[in-house]
Image (cartoon, rainbow over all chains, first blue to last red; front, top):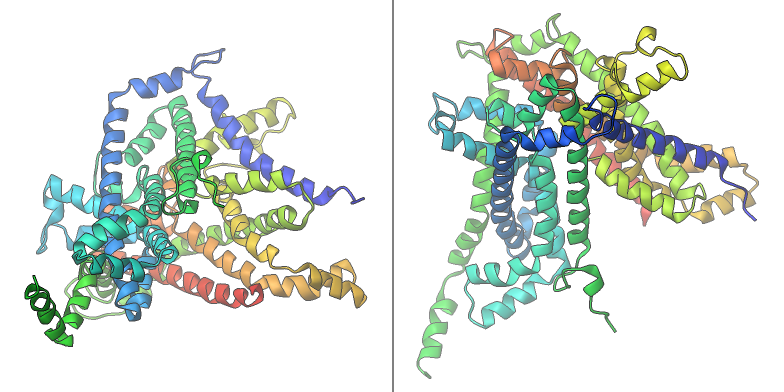
Length: 269
Length: 299
């Protein structure tokens, strides 16, 4: 019989407490808006706020645009590099990892200088241009994750054979990417997409410095103005992060051609 | 039909190899263009600006000014804070990884921690600040329980969430799970046979850890420490939301500089950014080197 793992249990308990106490405290705080009783007033108040819905909509739209841009940029590149230009792999990989090294605040600093008023490409001069720059910023932030996810997805399928098969049936290059490669890495893209979504939805630094009416700056403003609503927002943010991570994980481990839900999986013989 | 097939095949076969090479290059042009415009160019602009005077002449004054009394305290504060939170994250994260992987806990505990850590390591930014205000703020749950149940006045004893240690503990919420996630594979790499071999040679438990396990784990642990350090160094949103930008770590100073040129010298701002990039680049590069070194044991 094994000895009871006393020290290991102690460590696990301590860490579990460190993880759970802040969550419990936040839940508790978010329910205390009405003096002396438990209520969901803080949540109701958040949802009643028109600003909440408008900033959330804006951020969701910007994040979706960033995901689309990221996928459009990464899928053909990763495909092409794997198929035709393996020599460029170190370069594209390095470039895709660079945003991990460059802090967002530095990135946006460069943006406002280069694409500011006195530049050849004055993106920040117009509303649409600034929005575009925001989407580009989110895309850059998510590049490491998107590239990694898609590249892993490509490793799992035999793109050379698929490409040859498509070409021998007369498909053009574009058609091969759009109708053969893309569907096969859809899961990988989705996995990268959920991580991108969870990063960019509440992004604060780039958003705030580009002065966009998005969720991140709104959160900070709420924190300065109110007591209970921020706790409710934090709980919702935690749940949202959890959902994104679960979906990311689900799509990352899903194989091409597999059913959408795990319990509908066809049993392989 | 019989005529068409060779006609279609001919130009293809006749096309010189040159054309294919050109087309191949075209395939990565969008990506390279995008990264050049929105990743390389901004950094190049800042780096270039860091070595210039406002009039455009080359100078090293801006970099020298980084070590001056205006900027250096910010760097020193950032370094100390990142070091502290990374060290705490390292110690507790490694202990937790050990407990889950080798401590003999039931498998469901490990699964629960893995799931939770995946979420917690990504739960940063403004919401994290809110959660800790509700926990350790002046009216936070833990503060109140300590006061009312245990009669211990946290804030009376010098603790403040909006100060150095408060921030370090808040950072720990994403540092600890990140360390745990990164150390689990390393712990898994500690072979049972090594332990048995050491024991059969007469080594005690502590001897095994000191002479076998720790040297094997050290490169991973050190690499992870550097990653945590960089992670903390770049953290801005959490500090901003906790202290309303009144805590002068480097990212906050840079943020203020972009907002309103608080340093009264744009080129000094570029140097500030350059310093930050250098610190991030060095710690990340060392992390990659050490990670590759650590993978030697994992085959």
